[in-house]
Image (cartoon, rainbow, N blue to C red; front, top):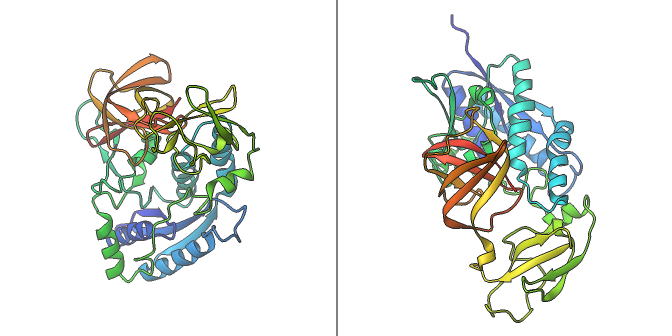
Length: 366
């Protein structure tokens, strides 16, 4: 009698991870659901849905007929993700905690836990794919692929995964569109089939972001000015703004400037002078960049991509791939040069490199 392979599925209480678990169970694997609690500072708060998510997970596990375990990674999360998140904001950058969470919690702390439970692989409800190369010099290496549903593709958030992590990762939704995932959940009677997707950052939930940061970072007001030096008002602290921001700057009614009538946008931060630089109009030249430097690089293959081929890159998650070339000026730094200027390139965000459907990795925009 053959022994079923054990796969542990990270279950969040949402429809995607529920269907991932269902599909693996149907495929004949021994499936165990694992609910990760990553944040506990304000569990009783209106924005924190952890308790409801765990209840939803338990209901799903019951319908599918799998065991569910809950594990608390809040200490690891605070140490490996949240501390870096705050340090980046304090330095005036805009980090992407979901990228760090995947590399440090979901595919490190969770993977270690799953191996200790006797599983060879873990699965998540991410929209992405993984493929083992079968021939040539790269045989046996793993590639991270875009999902079939391009509007939901999450390879951007997974670009820091290593060969060892990808070798143990299963993405059951790789070939499915979101509408199919909801249909499968509905037909299987999963209670979360119509549950709306969570948007906010994992630990902030849907709460107002500035109010949340306020608890951890000091307010250090300073001038809001134009590139020409005209002072328009006062900001509450550079950490609370991001490049390309239009709403919530607090100068909506200010007149003047060449693009009279157009909205103001955050174009830059002068950390030395504690000044916020704003410009008028979405297409202002200061919001356009035709190159960027990325550091803290992480390449999925384990080696640096060749500088010769034409690649594409994303400088933010919701952006279309932009054709680019790369060059390496120093170790652990990569320069990306774009055919068309990119809008609101934001320090702290990830620049992620692609070759067709394959995600090669990337780094943090400087």
